[in-house]
Amino acid sequence: MSDTPAQAATRSRENTRARLMDAAFAVFAEVGLDGASVEAICERAGFTRGAFYSNFDSKDELFLALAASVSEHKLTTITERVRALKDDAGRPAGPVEVVQWLVDLSLDSRQGVLLTSEIRTRAMRDERIAAAYQAWLADMVQRVAAIVDDLVATYGMRLRMPASAFAQLMLELWESTSVNALIQRLDDAATGELVRTRTLVLAAAVVEGFGQ
Amino acid sequence: MSDTPAQAATRSRENTRARLMDAAFAVFAEVGLDGASVEAICERAGFTRGAFYSNFDSKDELFLALAASVSEHKLTTITERVRALKDDAGRPAGPVEVVQWLVDLSLDSRQGVLLTSEIRTRAMRDERIAAAYQAWLADMVQRVAAIVDDLVATYGMRLRMPASAFAQLMLELWESTSVNALIQRLDDAATGELVRTRTLVLAAAVVEGFGQ
DNA sequence: TGTATCGGATACATACGTGTATCGTAGTTT
DNA sequence: AAACTACGATACACGTATGTATCCGATACA
Image: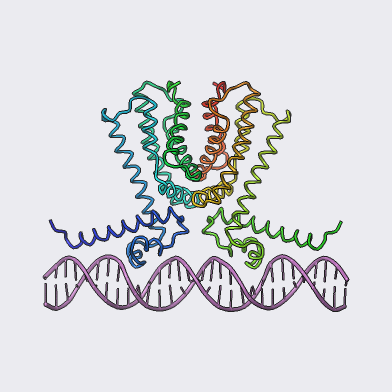
């Protein structure tokens, strides 16, 4: 099956877009949005700026596209895992295993944490990014809340606060813990342990009937 | 009492240093560290760059000095308030009032939140700033933990986790909530309410014998 | 009142990043 | 096979930030 020219061209174009975005992901994580020059991004991607300006209007537009892509990827991932949860095969054994499972779900790479921080920082100052961030966060909260609701029903427990508030608290806690772990130069294992412990504390507090 | 020339000169010098740092505080909050030009800082302070380079070696050095100053200011503030707490006059009536009091203690201005975020972002990438940040955080944690210990003893309650871990959790929660409130464009009242509510939830979870 | 000193202003050299306009070429179409 | 199209490279013009070297004026002291 051969492509029409438009398709072939598009596919190639999409490919260089993707390479540029991958490079931008790395460079933004390294030096931040303002610290990253278009030149540096292109160099890492193996292009010159000609390619860049042929694909994006500006660095800001690339950043927006990248943020959207990362957000969507996270949402997709979580959706898949929720579906896996529904299949009895992968269902965790008990509440504590659920925490483990949720933490795995939320942990991000070093670069991911850095980029998310960049997005949040930007959102504090830029109305447009704030809107996008809030929309994404609401989406995440909703999905995590759905998981929580489902688990609570399954194990016959009760929440001491609305599931969505609990979910948002969890998400913020995970993020904030990741950031601090990064500042403390903890390795992945220690970071995971810290997040797990804290999540258990919070769960014990908010979920009536959760272990001890 | 008149100054020696050196003293007078120093005093004036300290004054322009202070003005530059005040300006930098505002500009960094507005556009971030990388987004702020030395020129912009000087302009806001009512100087030219000549004054800047006469007082600081680089923008980074100014940022470091500013971060240290802000940190120290926060520590001083909290110390004062702890002392006030010791005087029976200002002592809160009960656990819930204590929460109110603690929240007041932790709330920061919009600009303060933005600058703290900038510091934290920087700490993730820069070893030197990370060390300073961790030292400061440890200090804060220690003081808050002392308050917590004192209060717990006073009201005859018990903690379900080490006071320092609890204190750190609190500090992170306050910070993270402030950031999110800022992104959501909440006003000060709503932000305070949110922080208060969340603090109560956490306190109820961790402090055995805390209200309901 | 003359003079030395210090802090801040001015002027300059330079590096860097951006965006655009143009060019060369590989792959496609007829 | 010739022409066309699209993508990315190259070259250029411009603006902006930096840091330094020099200058000027006010204040302190003799």
